[in-house]
Image (cartoon, rainbow, N blue to C red; front, top):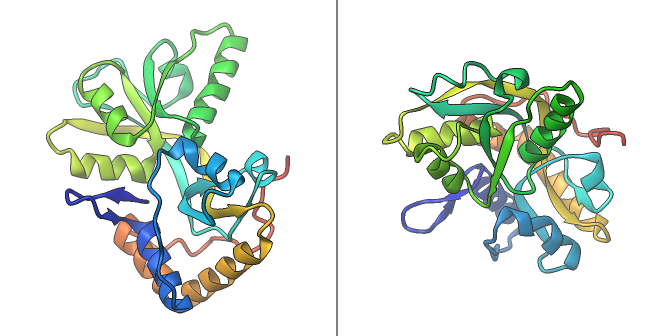
Length: 233
């Protein structure tokens, strides 16, 4: 969704979509780069106006921040080294007892924590979770053998594989259900989230969003809802 290239430039689906919004508004974007774990706290504290990083739209988050309409959907997956014969499938019961890398304060981390509760309640061994700040750190942990697998958004893992062809790794399979992704604004700033959503709807209808989805994900996500997308809870 967003990453930096070798020159330090921020690129990806989110930045390009954000530039399209900025062009429509006739404004210039000022970026603040930070670890993912600081995004929602910074938004709540008013350190910046909104976040155009990919956030899973969740009921607990919606109590703290406002979400735009969904800009994408995602599903998590399990990645392992090609020669790791311990990771035989992406089923949680087959990951029991293994060591897994996740990014801090992300939906994949929370999902795996919830899966561990289910494993514990069933009497099975839990998955040992090691949390890192960045995707690069999770891949490094996998490549050096500190973990057996990585769990993250499938598109994030696919991009990591394309960037790190020196690391012989594979996507074992999907895990968990599909999630909707949006941008966030401060809870008190409904006018900004509404304005962003209206422009995103415009970019959906004129084909800009679909072209960017095809560029970065390989297909158009034409089933994204524009209302009633906040989960109950």
